[in-house]
Image 1 (tube, rainbow, N blue to C red):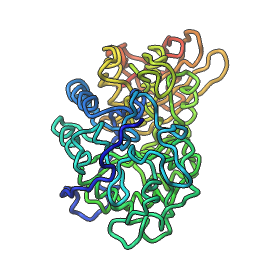
Image 2: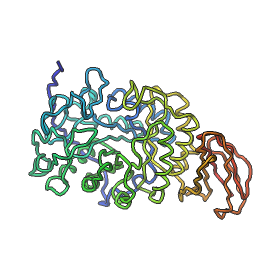
Image 3: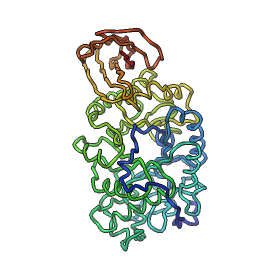
Image 4: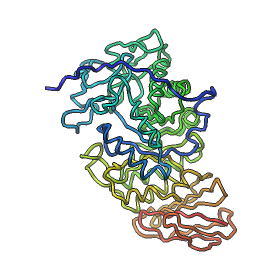
Length: 469
């Protein structure tokens, strides 16, 4: 028999939110001027991370990663859920612990933590400091004292349980059933109904969410089930307006991909980062596909808006065999991991670590703390794929320039399964000077080249060079 939770609808304590006084949209206030860099709990922990584990991770980030500009610590999905007894069952669509009797009545409401306005609150069982309606305020404070920024994951829409109880929408005369679309649930996580953006009360509901997140001190919000398989433009606009009115700057990240390129102007206007890939895991074929996606989206990168190739599945991931595949150290070879990091950086994707930082080897931290490589992600421009070949010597070449001094960056990728010599004709790109070459992965100066740059590249490997006149 399941242990009954004494209170599952908690009152919300109100907190003053700090923030913007200028009246300009948060989208225009210089937020995400560079691709966001941070850590997200999903690849390692699925939904299971608790307060102790998260704070320990934040401490490691502060000690080992902050000086390399990794700054966002993000708790991924279902943080409102009371952990099952075995601690391993992910509460997705078919989990009997979260079944629904009819449209919206949960079989086990004791597992669902919402407030009197139908807004999810953190589970006090997993996050004890949230008890009494405090939400993530104290956890965010801890993150901020460590010099980092705090983020959360949410699903679009409104809890089905809030609709079952027909709770009021804060700041309006409407109720949950007035704005919910009961035919609209996520295919892989069915605990919310979508919201009809045209209904009175819809904007007020999202406003109430982001007012609450602002009071907690949230700096980053990842909104899921909003890009694919259905592109929910109406709810994206509601969320954008809710952030802009809440009084606190927040990075808005949209998931999952693949986002439609036809929506690029809309996404540039409304989001700071958006997934262009489906869930990316540690296999070579998925990495190959991201070459095509990042090339396709490269015209849409810029300050405040970044196409997102998804998280970095490095180090120790899928703890206890959840969420994807066996408990393991990343299946990507070292050369494949270098290829991944090089591609993400030369294409200026956001960088979100998926590893369990508490149990990953030092080699993972070495991969993530090469400041010369990270500099390309944060400070390059004119990022373009210039060569893509097929066949036995399949390879890719990207170029970019240094926004600070005009130096050039060249990344060469060997996509074949054997070592290959890759040569890049500089003169075809109208580069006729002599250039000093520095290997950014090895931190070595390699001499001077003119007209042709060549490298012997390992199978599935990559090199990245800085070229200085």
